[in-house]
Image (cartoon, rainbow, N blue to C red; front, side, top):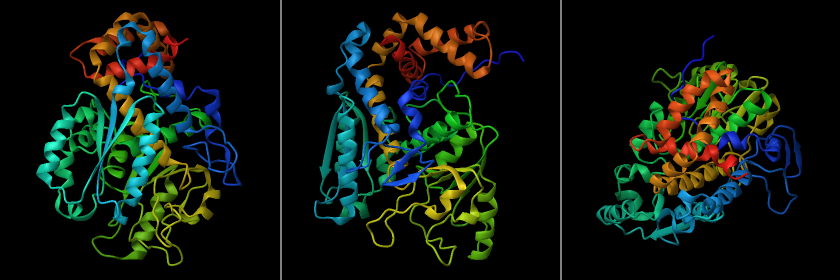
Length: 447
């Protein structure tokens, strides 16, 4: 079959990531003193216990720091100072408000992880008495501050602000070139359409990366030129339809050629009624078909099972499926995290994530990585100059990625690679192509 031209995104960090020897253990490791044979590991450390094989976060974050330190060795990039670029998180709520206690802890985790990459972390804590006009005024300044790589509001807001401020309208004012958490509906729309965009929503992106690890390592699936494993031939179920996880995840998977089932939600199979028996039958019929389950329901009023609060039970799962469970709700005792999948059902899966150490660290890593990319967007002219200075390396890297994906000779892919190289360098092309290309050539530059 003749070589078919490729015109989508190309490059990124995953091609490097998936070829790291220390990353091969991400699927199999002990967890909390128990032996699980197929845990997909978002992070590699459980506090107070042994050091486990490295996970997604533990490989990417130090690599971002290493690359930032290498800027001084690249003439076009030597004036970029990572420490001068900030990842801004805005927390609205009073210190004694228990509703924002979990958010405050999460912000601290993001801040600490950001600093490990060489970037700066900036946290703005605002009282719950703040008004929408006051927030709009602050946001306008942040949007125009070139030292801020990305910015995000930690939702939900606490106190009076949480009741009176339209956070959707607020987030739609975020400059999409700084919308690192995917909160602006323009970002969400571009992501769902598969269009050129600066960023993806962090949790869907992290979930797809973790599934790609499994498909690449265990199923021998080739990586696409954009660094994502192809989902062609797999029936994939999305459980949950939230605006920043389930819905964009469902749309992304279709663009990666998955046979997408769902998304499941509170009205699936009801015909407008609350017939629990019909709902459970439909939920089960779909879930038993799924080769891969992406679950992101969280705390929900489903209660379709009389004897458990978990949504997925063993009889709902296909033997040998893959489970990527993003839910972490604190129902019951308010302290122990619960996912959507009953732990007793995991024996039916080929691999799965757990409530802690799975998708959460991948989400934080994706966010910090997008802050790192935001720094490059703020210096896009320097990035394009670095690509121009290393054009032969960009072209040869692209040729290798294209020929590997297409199963074609390098000669067949060369013309396409040069076209994509020129697109990345051209000042009128979307900056995402230049940043993808720079990430792709960094390993060769640093040898």
